[in-house]
Image 1 (cartoon, rainbow, N blue to C red):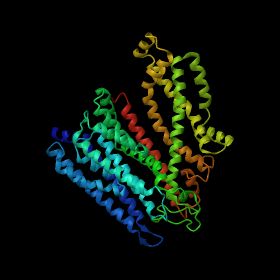
Image 2: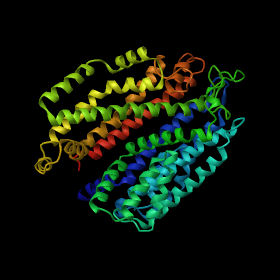
Image 3: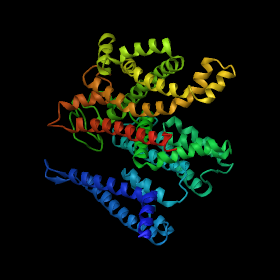
Length: 498
């Protein structure tokens, strides 16, 4: 009985076994979706490309089931995963080229025992770059491309190889607390691709630099432990991947996508179904839905981040001052914010936009103003607790000014709940942006934004449902991703779990 109990415990804590379960579920669900879409009921024929994807995903699902059985057998017999079983995961890496990020990630994680944070960052930087490369390559089927297309595609291929080499080097030479000195240069190089929006590269570079410098060991260990908790959460990692991928694609879209396809009317291609030239079809003005969704991600992310960062800064400052000084200062600030809090956020946004006009800047301001009270309350609660700690009293005794105490000693230690809250509420800002645009009160109608695209698609739900389905799926996926990552971040930063 004790042996059975030990095996069950081993299965629960073995990350590869847990990842295998998620990969099986993900691949099986997409296999079913591809099967359902593989038959064209209108034309009474099969869609060959979709049927091929169904076959690949089905084979992947069965292959991972086999690997899961082998992992379980190894853990029962040897207490660890054998090298032979790990090498079987190598073919799964190739599934990244059909969009199966779970299977590709599982393949990378299975290949090595040495799963440091920087290894995972390098792996997902590679996955992100391949996704961007594949999406951008679809522009080759269009009549013309932008002048920077070939140069950008070459750069994407180079970066993919860089991330792959980084993952191999890290797996062979790094430990959880050590990196060779020569990796300092590699870490610096990995900081450069941030211009493409690939934050996994930035995180890998920062982690390598901190380890290679042999700086503060406790700080490196804390950084490593925090990220390991997030990266062990499969859904949080998936959410972070989707966020980084969408952000990176929106950043580099100007180098590989022609904006004219998203905004110029083409009356010779009205309401066309998905084809190689128009992967997601065209709308009622002949505009490429694929290009509109890609450029629409820029607006959704810009407004989402801006409408979160601005109230977080203003509300955080007001909450810190209110919590620290208390009494009359606290009453004045919080009562004023209570008046603002009493007005529904979406109603306040509509009123501001109606008064000043519908454009991107006014939308950011409208969404930011309504969110200030919630951030102020969160920061105030944290400051009230932290201001009684001994190190704050010591700072007062040493003659530090109130401003220094608030912004140097208290606020940095109260940031964890604010970061988690901001991550969880970005999704709400994205939904509000799309909702107001759908109502005609957000982004200008001619600008490609997911809410605007969805508004056009809603009038063709019966005849051309793809016009509403694809932008709706993008909104849902981005919001879910922020929620998944926010949940993982909250668990990792929770003092009780630490």
